[in-house]
Amino acid sequence: MTMAYHRFHGVDTRIVRIFNTYGPRMRVEDGRAIPAFMSQALRGEDVTVFGDGGQTRSLCYVSDTVDGIFRLLMSNETDPVNVGNPYELTVHALAERVIAACGSKSRIVSRPLPVDDPKVRQPDGTRAQHILGWTPKISLDEGLARTVAYFREKLGL
Image (tube, rainbow, N blue to C red; front, side, top):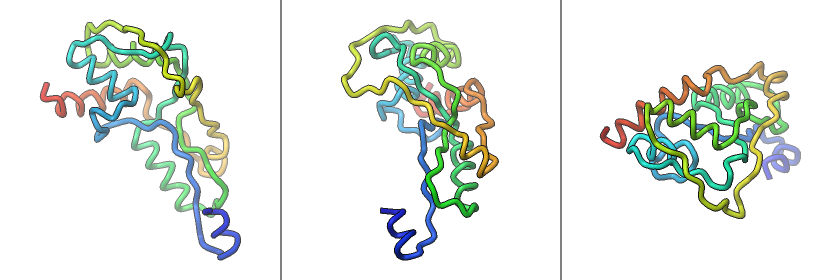
């Protein structure tokens, strides 16, 4: 629809494809991996991983995502651009990193994999890099540390 308005009506448009973004101000109970893992780890509960945890995710810290969106907005690019971190890791490895970032002794437990759970989530950031000069700057460990502080406050810990 956006491209139709751009082509037919000459509307100045941008299309950003946002991938997994995390950081402060996430809803504690929103069900995604980072809020679920952090809440469980900070409370000292078992951290629930669905399936064998071999499915992959790539995570982009919120300030990097905002920077990518802003750069696209300021550009003349009208074709879709992916904004997300191309660094990919397994859900099990992510759970381990979150537990470590929280300083928790939580264990990882497995539950059945939902049928709609994606196996791979990794954006191709080539266009964002070439067109916008954009790549994520915040490492996963730095982003997790910043996010843990927010979750501690939200959970009253």
